Image (cartoon, rainbow, N blue to C red; front, top):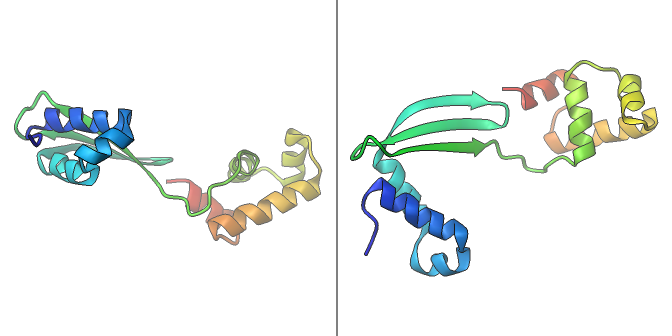
Amino acid sequence: MAPSSPAEILTELRRFAASRRRAARTSDPVALLARLFGACRPLDVEVRHGGVVIRLESTDDPGVRLTCLVHRASPTPLTAAEAAVAERLCDGRTLAQIAHLRGVSVNTIKSQVRQIFRKLEVDSRVALVRRLEP
């Protein structure tokens, strides 16, 4: 029996998330999500640092609400060290300041900045800020 209400669809999606192998044989998560979004209306959309937050409410049952966080896809994720350096670059710190804060040499920071720029396909600090900040 296929789920029909948003609450039943959410239950089926939770089952899928709890045991992907077993649920994958019985349910198609893409079809479930398509049905879920078709049965809901958007309440609010908010852009955040990491992506977009969408709040939905069932058109059939106003008591059923869903919040989705859609992360911005990153073609090549940054390492933890690169992410820390990128954050400090966006704060306007110099390479020497970042090196001192991280306890590494300026040459290490230069290398990490090159990797950050390459991975995020930017060529300046301004472009980096635009890429990372909403």
